[in-house]
Image (cartoon, rainbow, N blue to C red; front, side, top):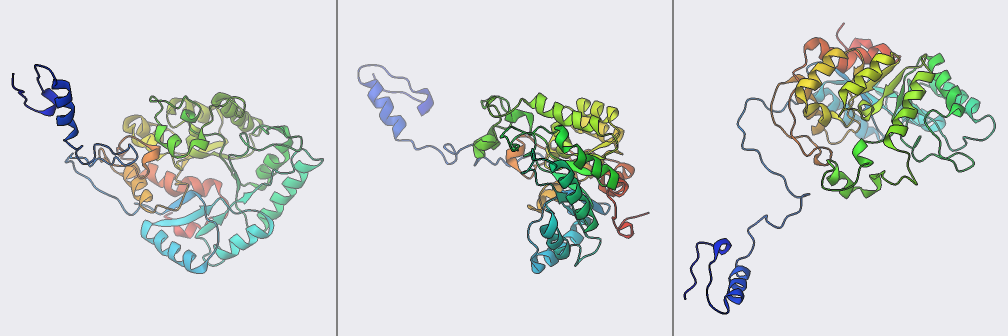
Length: 377
């Protein structure tokens, strides 16, 4: 009986030897282009036709309250300022200021050449924690750094996850040995931008249900699901929140929406409880962009507590996505870093009043020494 078929996917056979014939027919058809690509390579182009488009310049001058800049090559700084002007970025806050001589060099290379355009935050050296008098010495160094020109304090995520004391024990964010530093920041009137923890999916099983699967594949060291090495997400966040409660006279900027951008109701309750706590948008815009109704309502309600921030200077195009999410009501457009978001963005369409607060007015309230002449009255 002869072979009849409509396609290789619907072959009908009768008689002996047909399985071999089927295999030969299927093997003869090479896969179509793209059928064997990895998920990392998959970049679908939307066919959706709707109004809107890229926004390459912020509607108002803004402060990037979460930036990192290492090295002070003059040509690089000159080019950076030109790009800042194109973006309508008035001031860039460099959280990687360092301490002592390193801080002085950072300040000279940036705000020393472009007064008002750059801010440097000091950093704390936790390596000696546990030694007698460490807290007082660290607080004294912070005071010296502020006198040298630092306008805030940045705490990296090593605290609470990687930092150990002189006995080799992990140091929690609310460790009382650090209290002199937090108290000194409050006394000096400078904000503390603190990064504690990671996105909660980093603690979840790395399986087909994990929405940060791609990022964990690209950066497997970001997994936090080993209880022998890491406290749970809830414990890590709880220690940070205890820190905020224990120091009500110190202003804290809870970085990355406090890793609660996927639970804005919970973040709102935290802000309601703790008037000394602000937050910012560094590297978590994708959370707001996937929930435009809830996200816009959150930004409206907490418009006095949120600061603009991106977390890295590159890619510059990332700022364009920030502007588009915050300023427009555009639909279904790409985020700038796929590993952070397997979803599309939607614009929140924030009012001018809210935009001004997020872009610069909230920063003017809590970061001392900003050049007010760069912003509308």
